[in-house]
Image (cartoon, rainbow, N blue to C red; front, side):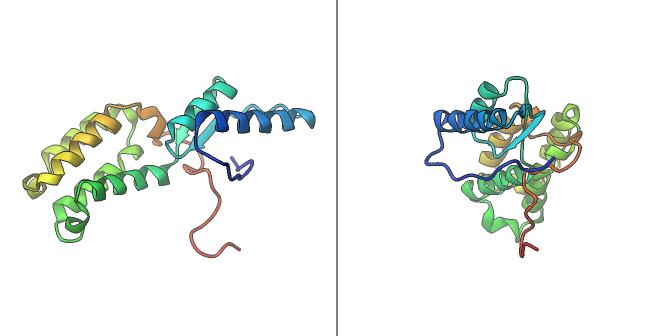
Length: 168
């Protein structure tokens, strides 16, 4: 897998994304190439997911692992758990367990998450924990986990070859 193109768009809506993907497909056809991606990695924007499905029906859409963990960290901060992260080992473990859920087989995610909730320890005494665990359960664990699950993903789990730091 390798990135095909990097682009800056004027907005983030399904129409703009669809137009962009059709344009890329048309350019490929002009050069007598048939663009048929098997898998596309995205950063969890519904509009992008919908546009890809429209322009490239049948493609497997996967969420980027890096962006998944970023979503988990943003959720923890939004719920008020950031200050507890370094101070409370139970909170630290809860957030870390949430972030690595995508590395377990999809059929074990429910059991792993339930075990995490059972072993929550003192984290359960912090009111913000409930907001975090409820959202995780409803939006990620009970959501469309094939989008974010990477247990059986072959190759990179992120769409970018860029390394953090200096590009050589």
